[in-house]
Amino acid sequence: MPFDDGDDDDTPVGGAPLPPDDRLWRHPSELGGSKPTPSPVAADDSVTRLWAVALVAGLIGSALSLGVVAVTGRLSNDVIERPVVEKVAVRPIAELSATASSGRGVIAIAKSVSPSITRIEVTNGSAKTVGSGIFVRTDGYLVTNAHVVNNASDVQVALSDGTVVPGRVVGTDSMTDIAVVKIDRDQLPAAVLGSAVDLQSGQPAIAIGSPLGLVGGPSVTVGVISAVGRQVNSSDGVELHDMIQTDAPMAAGSSGGALCDGSGSVIGMTTAVSTSSDPGASGLGFAIPVEIVRAVANDIIDTGSAHHPWLGLEGADLEASSANNMGVTGGARITKVVDDSPAAHAGLHSDDVVTALDGAKVTTMSALVVALRGHHPGDSVTLEILRGTSAQTMTITLGEKNHA
Image 1 (cartoon, helix red, strand yellow):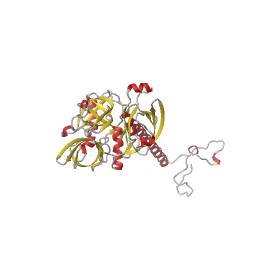
Image 2 (tube, helix red, strand yellow; image 1 turned 90 degrees about the vertical axis):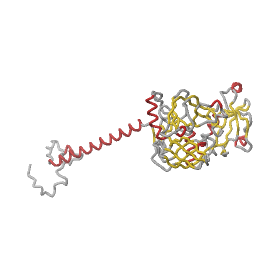
Image 3 (cartoon, one colour; image 1 turned 60 degrees about the vertical axis):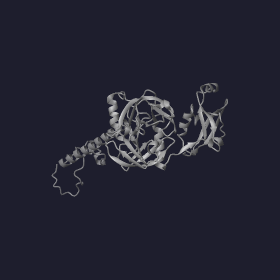
Image 4 (cartoon, one colour; image 1 turned 45 degrees about the vertical axis):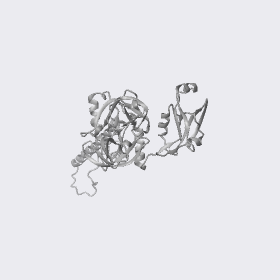
């Protein structure tokens, strides 16, 4: 090969050209019958090519690794962090751990959930009361019972680490006994919100709260879901529907705490009941389903108050004998229609029986109340009713229920 002194202006920039077999394009003169002899590549070009190959391989490897991490994380995570910094379980109901009722499972759940539980110290004139709360967002919003903070002149929130900070009542809703309190902190440990849909009696239940105002962090009690769909009165005498009943012990001060399933997801907010009007409720624990808690809390955070749809009727569960005669499994029998209400304008009468709302069966008066809570004032709903033996369908535009 002729010696190249390196002064040839025609030498391609970047070094000698690649051999024809290594190029994507060839000059027509190189396409003859005989295969040209490859020209050797300068040593520095070989090093450059090796570094380029290594770099590309490294980038591809990194991309694949990141892809695996992203996919693995997406599949294995039990929580989605939403833009509003709530934490909600991916599954409608988090799977119940086989060890949930064992010591090891409860310890893990307590360690996971306890940082999200607060003690709320309320001053009302000369009286002082204590309750519990649950952080539902990382930016300082927590939920508790309305009866805990009603008429509060001062609210102090004790975090799980013992720090006490002032709180501000954002709003309360006496109809559901739910309130929202805000503290000026961020990056707080929000609880993972699960679902109370399709809960069954016998499933594990773990109650976590701050009973009796005791210092040293939240307390944990264990039991099972005893029943669902209960109707009880709150401490303020408000009728609460679709309540979760549990045998997990709850002491005074636990109101506003968390009821968790076997995976540690919050399925309800514990609340006290009025034992004077409900003597059979003494010693039992109840919780407001988390779906109701979340909906009311979001309404209060967004608008400052909760807005409930209103039909304008009163009713009771259809008696079993009447249900058999009508050929239905149950229903909500109307006992009173309020004058100038949506129900009155739609033509509903006393003794009409509501059997479905928007195609979903209604078997009790409580079920009708719960179904309506999934709507907003101004929504149009379709009611299926029985008037004697005649089935009818009517569309009603919901009003808004005024707070007492």
